[in-house]
Length: 449
Image 1 (spheres, rainbow, N blue to C red):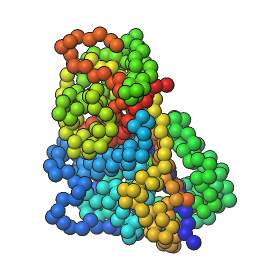
Image 2 (image 1 turned 120 degrees about the vertical axis):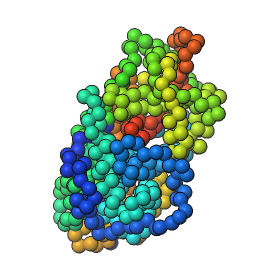
Image 3 (image 1 turned 60 degrees about the horizontal axis):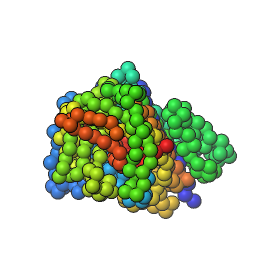
Image 4 (image 1 turned 90 degrees about the vertical axis):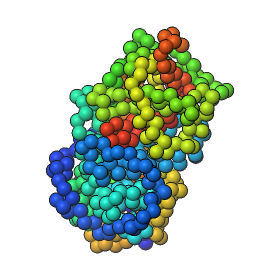
């Protein structure tokens, strides 16, 4: 009889990791020896996901960390497209793709055979030039060191990880050690077998606490049962103040065009100052980058021209195009009009990831996760995966949180200024700009309260 494995991944906009040793270590210093290791086949042919013309590696950046950041970016856009394809164009989308990647990287610690290979492929880990899968964990640790160092006194970017395991089972010591060393994920025993509902409440409370109460009820009633054996949690929380705040006195009511036939009233923020900006007539988009204090974390808005539906932009968006667009931005004086808005999104990841090729992990017959239990038994599979995310944007700045649960079981303006009028659906990306790591992505289709 197969056993349901619960994995819970959460991302919170604030991150605090005690990884000082990891941040200064080398691969040989860390005992990363999971039960199974997958080696990417040697080939002269570039993978389909790999960019044809790699961008130069940012200064003071480990090349493999750069590749991992790019792999996470490709996965982020692929997952976003899966979500977009299954929802009406008038519906908001918001998620933290790096939260999802982190959760499944933790899952990969115990994976073998086709399950391990599929995780490597779907999350683009196999595009990292370091051929073996165990090294991905080391570079995830290095990426965390890069992302979550203190950006600015007013900025919170915090991530926390935790394992919740069925107390009657003995989990593999190596698995636990690597989880704690790389991801800071200590194991807390819970009584899933006898009190699954109480365990669910405990986990949801942990998530709520780590996300400043922004993410609640991530695991819905019935998500856990007596066969649940493990829940993996990653949290990320972000809160930042704009480098250039919007003046509250400049707020004004405006119509937001949800569609050609539907408008609603929003509180539009306004300011005119210098931002990184680009209008790309041939691509029919405008890009605006608004930095948070410290400049490392930024929000990029992607606004289609008025005669172009956002769905058209979404369909052709990939990492190479997005990177090219963002690289083309330059400091320009811009008259900026952006609505205040809140986004809250929750969804099941299972069907999206299965469609992307992660099929065995969710199958009671085919999943291979022998590295998680001490006896090496191959009896676990993932029953479900949940993700929940929150974002608020106002004149002071932004607050965002995300949780992924993987469960087994008109203003006047000067005519010589550029104008960015976000009065119609647009895309957004919150990123760590120095290595273009995508922390959050979303679609603002209907910001009306």
